[in-house]
Image (cartoon, rainbow, N blue to C red; front, side, top):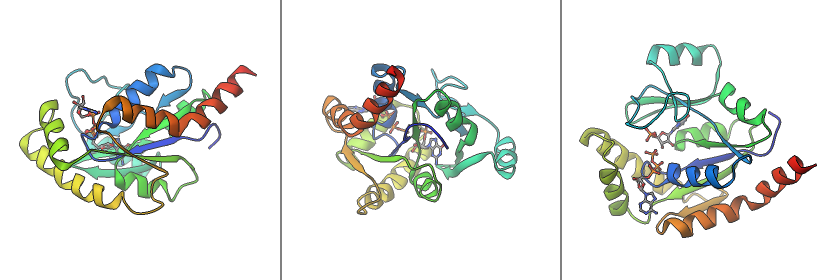
Length: 198
Ligand SMILES: Nc1ncnc2c1ncn2[C@@H]1O[C@H](COP(=O)(O)OP(=O)(O)OP(=O)(O)O)[C@@H](O)[C@H]1O
Ligand SMILES: Nc1nc2c(ncn2[C@@H]2O[C@H](COP(=O)(O)O)[C@@H](O)[C@H]2O)c(=O)[nH]1
């Protein structure tokens, strides 16, 4: 796929990926674009279909996967999630840096493609902090919360694997974490700005 190098952001649910990437999209308007994933989970209050996710049924998603419309897909916490080829192409067609917010299964699947992204892992300072953030967010049932915490433990272990991620950021203080994220992406940001100037 053509265009600037995409960015994969991964890390446990509740680590702060959406918070960080929303700041990035706001500050660097015209540089980054979000790859809108498909999911079978229900929208949360305030989420918009086509902006946060494409909300679909399991049947629709399975049919689209069977037709080869997805770059990667995964089952997470009882729901399906996936990145469609169209979602990435829509961002790359505008010559923007495409950001994918995906789980660890997605990372492993993307590694088998020719997307060649920068892999960024966002990690919480501790399991305790992660649990508090997820509880305070008030988006999950107790069952979903427990599933996410179990997945988080695995994620936090695997993400330490040398070479899996290009950058690992511990999101404790939000401003510090955001500064580290910008530093990691500065070169790519500059390339897009230079291209769009000429
Ligand atoms: N550095 C931080 N300090 C305190 N709270 C934070 C910080 N970063 C994020 N949060 C809060 O933690 C909660 C989880 O953050 P967020 O929704 O961005 O996580 P996420 O990784 O995108 O989760 P998911 O994968 O479930 O979408 C949110 O309520 C957010 O406001
Ligand atoms: N493999 C993929 N994972 C995805 C995708 N879109 C989101 N996600 C990940 O799912 C969990 C839960 O998200 P939530 O919005 O329900 O809290 C989180 O880790 C996301 O990164 C995708 O297209 N593919």
